[in-house]
Length: 224
Image 1: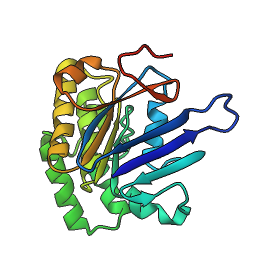
Image 2 (image 1 turned 45 degrees about the horizontal axis):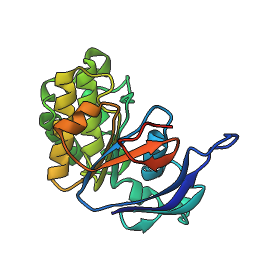
Image 3 (image 1 turned 30 degrees about the vertical axis):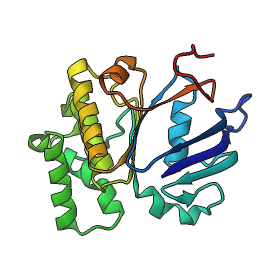
């Protein structure tokens, strides 16, 4: 499903690489925690897996496709099979909740009647069907994060990435979001969740990828 072979990523003008020598493989249908201190490289790794950037060195395979040597025109179809939940939700303020969730399907050219039905179904799944005509600003932080999750999964992604999805939430809302992510895992998606909340790892045991200074490290060791 996902394989990284000696992956490095260096941003232009950066003194040190954001990622260096990363090698790992994740099976299809797996659930994985991604941990590490701020600046350890978690967001950079998720950007690679979301195809927002390409590795500076090494070989990257996502959903069975070689990404490291792919041309730009070869990636949009693959990217549509990947969902991502951002920490800052990135909902469009001028659209209501329903249209925010439906947006990926509109971009993909789905029929209007079907995409609205799918978006409503996802809002029901996250418990927000009653807020579909509200604007994002009228929702709480937890509700906005659940809308962002509904938008990320409305196209039934094979790979679902979440970048600190509980960072701004209270415990009840955090557990609700994690429960929804685990439900997507149960339904067959490969799920990777970046988090600072170590308590969640104890409550929801799963394999852990731990980053320290851009490298994979033992999660029990202190970050460099």
